[in-house]
Length: 164
Image (tube, rainbow, N blue to C red; front, side):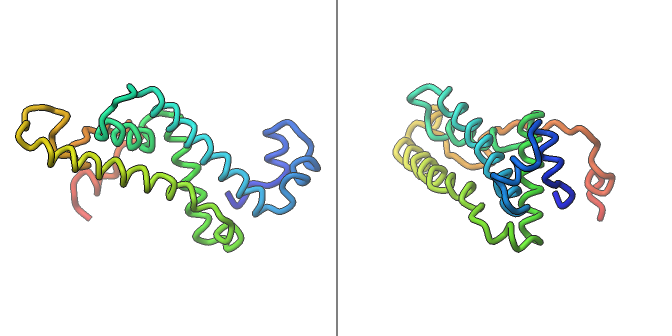
């Protein structure tokens, strides 16, 4: 991220450096614009996944859908995850980027997930006498059956063996 400059962005976009600098007068603004773009792509993918669910999808299914979309399990989500993680790492060391309002993205999901988890807990408590019905089983992150990420490289030996 530190090496990205106006010329790189202009070349990638197929526009002049002056045009990039017109819309993004500082490198901090350029980086912030990139972060806004990445978050918009993540939000759009999530919105599409949620809109594709049946209208009466239960809370557990909606939670699974949100978490599934946020995990880096395919090429597109892995790319978005890596870019977003690079921005997060840069914000730890770059005071200009850290000072800009870029933290609203994850906070947008907090109320929605809180509402869904509360609904799932209420449903579970209200239907305890139906333990065999899948829609009434307790909801916990360990029970959501999330897909395992596809690894493009093997785990380091210390993680596989459990020895540090």
